[in-house]
Amino acid sequence: MESPLSESLHPNAPHHLPSFITAPGDTDVLMVAVGIFLIVAVLAVGNFYLHLHTMPERMAHKSQKLQFEIVAVLGLLALFTHNHLFWVIGLFLAMIDLPDFSTPLRRIAGSVEKMAGVAPEPDAAEAPDHAAPRAAKISDVVKTSAAVDEIKSKIQRDLKRGPGNA
Image 1 (cartoon, helix red, strand yellow):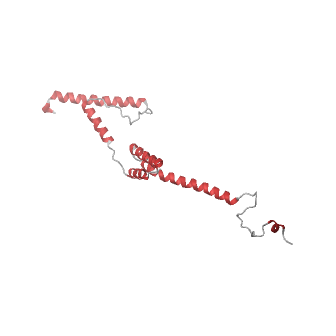
Image 2: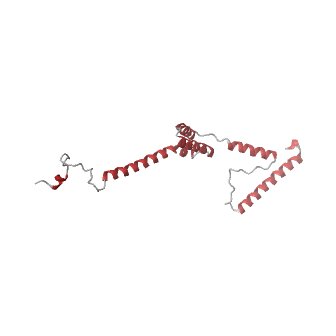
């Protein structure tokens, strides 16, 4: 007597089917596993790509603000235009330490203003110190004015002595 299973199968069908073939109406476990793996793989590759893509920006983060901004713009241009030359230029720029020209020039300008007797302009890059107590500011003013008065008195005394008696 034949089994009822063999009667339902086509005579040319194999009697032993592989495990990944499911019966009608059952969940295809292999397809679900491959789908989950594919989603995880796409997210992992995308995360790696974006992490690699932002490497020049992370390298330039420790440098000057202007250099960081230029590297960030080059990175965005490379991302949106798919032009890898922008990314390479940004990477090279992030590796190079640009010299700081603004600080010496700012100090020279401040010294020239002091020599000319012009009050120096407040620096826009430096934030005002609101956290310092007012008493400390007043004592600094008193110390500074005392030092200025002492210098003025020395200058007046030297002027009274004459040019050859200094």
